[in-house]
Length: 398
Image (cartoon, rainbow, N blue to C red):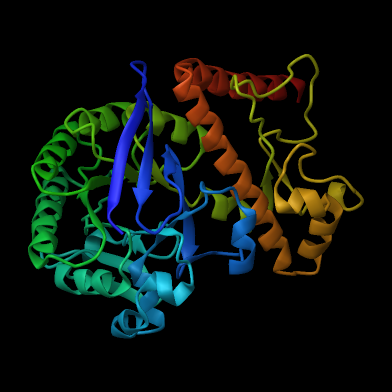
């Protein structure tokens, strides 16, 4: 189950396309790629028998938080079963383990100590020591796992931020010293909104014998305009031949920003948040990045997504998107999903998550094609500009 990574195409203007090979996956997973957010190893609403309906092999990379499993089986029991792949019967899926999942296991900087980070979990606030974490990883046997990080929000003091970097590097050394017999290690990189601390952490982690890098600390209060410089400070000192994964960037514009900086893997909870709110993604997957027809004024809906809880879809017998090939759009209508929401059937979230996951994976596929064709920069500019113009047009029409 050893990981292999290869960069196939790197654009001088930003972005790179590669391939991630995992021993148990039947085909390489092309990057940039999306890790599907899960709860105890499975997507939040999609049943195991419906997983094959998602694009292959794009959907064969799952992100889990080992802390989720503290509620159920003991780690030693999972180990006796044969690890997560065996327990979940997902033998052909890649599993990436990250302590933070941005939904239920949120980092709690005030509770962190020199012994380990603190998380808000369904079991309450929990402090995790490197030894305990590595023991969980060894029992679960994921393909990829990120070391512990002391993530802090953007408003902490410079002293606290510096301490978080020192702790993160020390915990990395502790994890490596324990030599877990499971998966490829991704060294954690933090540093908050401070460029010097970000670079210092990246330099230190790059010196260690790790298979890749996990970039944390984003989505915790930093300003949007700070991100490009922060990402550049990190990526500029990391070797090109190793993959980079990030948490905290989920919106389409944020994904494009991360890819432009050189990120390969994205751990996002965006799909979960949309599905929980009843929203279905409808933005265009045009290969040129263009999003809307501005010749007419449309203010009846947000063309990025639609809210299927709304009454307007009660009698709408069309699919979410006419040209979408996902299981939901091929078999069900907006009216049916609206009905399921009205009667509080969980099937509504299941069908919606299938569509949103399929649509976002197709978005990543279009991005990879743009990188391979050498037109990623133009694609990104067109995509962002067309969405901005649409918002301005919508405001004028109102």
